[in-house]
Length: 102
Image (tube, rainbow, N blue to C red):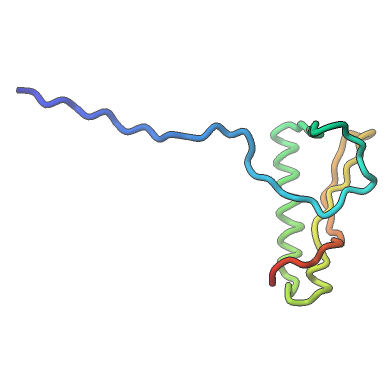
C-alpha cells in the first residue's frame, strides 16, 4: 500500500494594511482635517528608500547621545513637509515631551 505524501505546510501571512504606528510629538502648523480622515503621502520605492536612508542616518546620529541627559532626550526627528514642492525632508529637531523612559 502506497503512503500518501504530506503536503508542505504553507506559512500563513497577515495582510499588511500597515507596518506600524507611531505617535507624533507635535504637528506645526496644525493641519485642518475633518473627521478621522488620514493625510496620505504616496511615494515611489526609490523615494521611500531615500526616506529610509535619511531616517536611518538621523537616528544613528541621535543614538550617539547620552539618553540620561534631559538635553539629549529633548532631541528627536523632524519631518519637514513642503506640499507646494511635493517634498519631505528628514532633520534632527527638538521635542516638547521628553519624558521617554531612560
